[in-house]
Image 1 (spheres, rainbow, N blue to C red):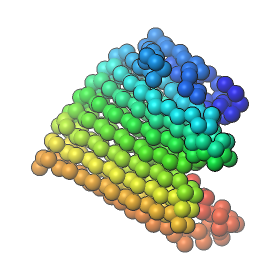
Image 2 (tube, rainbow, N blue to C red):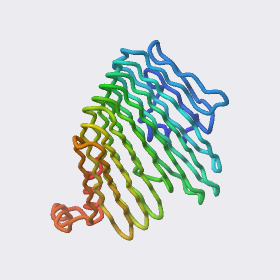
Image 3 (tube, one colour):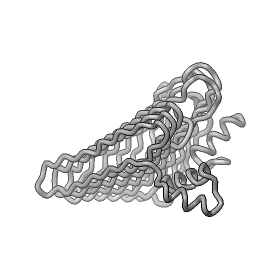
Image 4 (tube, rainbow, N blue to C red):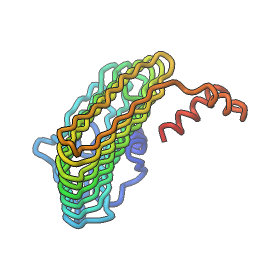
Length: 305
């Protein structure tokens, strides 16, 4: 990998060297490194269309890194990755995609991830998106995530997109069995004329299942964001979805939290708030010696933590 690809890799996966544990690094459509372990097997799908990751039952304190790097203007791909997490496992999966585009053609990566989470398994999933480059070509990312959770399983998802992505459409669906718990934390910031759409559809199918889908976002300049989250409670369950956004400049935000209850025992809550940075917050920080721009950045950084 060249210096540009290594820098992007550090941005999306916090990797500065070969990671411990299992990993699959993809650069411009081909493998740039792959390693399996005794408990985690990574195998390529036919035709280079993605990978299969199989985690043995009972695997604990292990990780899988699967970052993607694009540095060729005009390059576009769709990749399908499947994860089979064995019963009783407790693992961390770090994904993410970074695009460096200095050309005049669009660069695009569409990653479709399917998670099959076994009974009583626990998964922490981190997905970061990043873009850079001074070319006129766009940096486009369209992630799709499907989650199938068996009885008693738990999954924490951290979705982060802070800089440089011109267009993104994130679609996440989840099916939860009895006692399954899903937590989603999304952090998003858009600039200039960037466009971002986040869609979450969660079906609470099993008794005692629960879901918490929370998005924090900032829309700056002339960017546009849409948040569309629907929780469907089919049994006795608990669901909560929240969108909290800061709007700046000429930005636009559409928030659509939705609930569907198909059982009298379903407990579902939604919240949404959109507003500008409070003037008193700016004044307080400026009295400490910060400029107005510095005060804004401080508030935004704290909000998106």
